[in-house]
Length: 78
Image (cartoon, rainbow, N blue to C red):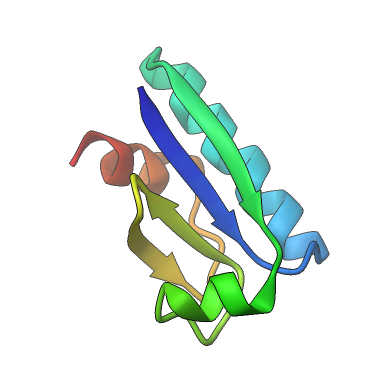
C-alpha cells in the first residue's frame, strides 16, 4: 500500500493536490492511504519550505507546485 502524503496548511492548492493525487491513485488502481500533514514542524522535517508538497512513502516528490494527474501517476509508479 502506498502512503500518499499532502504537506500543506490546507489552502486551495493543497486541496487540489490531494484531489489530483487521489485521482492518480484510483486511475492506477493501487491501494493507498492519503495523509494530510498540516503541522509546520512536520512539514519542515521533510525538508519542505514551499507548499503544497507531495510525498510518497515518506519521500518528497514535489514541492511548491500542483502537478496534474498524469505527472502524479509517474511519481506513484516510480
